[in-house]
Length: 279
Ligand SMILES: O=C(O)CCC(=O)C(=O)O
Image 1 (cartoon, rainbow, N blue to C red):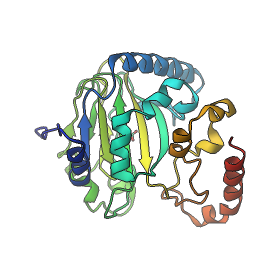
Image 2: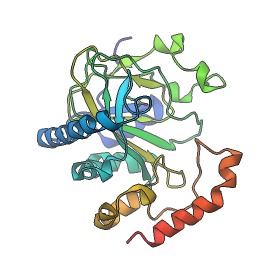
Image 3: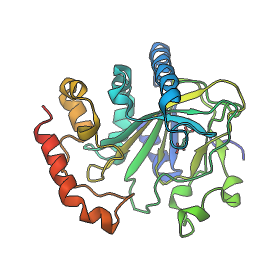
Image 4: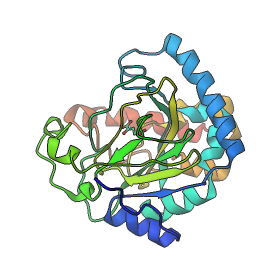
């Protein structure tokens, strides 16, 4: 499918694109030096974790992923504070939005395309969570750039996630987001998307940062997960962004099962404890 016009010029246009077509792209959001430092730091982490990581979840024929980067190198904290990124996130998911996860990701060299999928299947009148990708390499069709299905965030997805995976009709409507290193790709988490097949022998690296409405439980509970020395170093703005100020009971889209509800008391107490003892 021919690429849609990718470039909006004002923040308001980017916000509008996320609300309507489901995604937007901002080139040049990171400087070349930031890209080089972040790429080198990510390589080091990925190399280390390849030797120790879980082969199914973290390092598989599709991708290699590293979770909780904020605790692993300071450059990733800097990237989360990129001014244009925060302005956009706060306009789309609220001034008090929080970060749900900060992961390093590479489409695996000589790897397989991910199945098309939305990160969440929630239909609401507003964007409740936004996924962002900061590119650390040029994204091309050859190295498995991100593919999206414009406007798919509002579509009826057949009941059960499985019926949506790899759906042929959706596949025929994807467009490839070919962008330079240092770009931002931002999309409604309900948009259907995936990384493509990396047909090169080099990593296609990026950072995934998700932004959520303040009442949604993050994928990672930073107050419980970050090392003590990193927590002690966080600024007021970062504490708010990583959800340290958020109410310990937040809505969990992904695992809101009865079992989960039963465990809520304990989780609440643990979060409360970590909140009180955070600083
Ligand atoms: O990095 C990308 O191109 C997208 C990856 C993705 O969709 C995912 O990990 O769920």
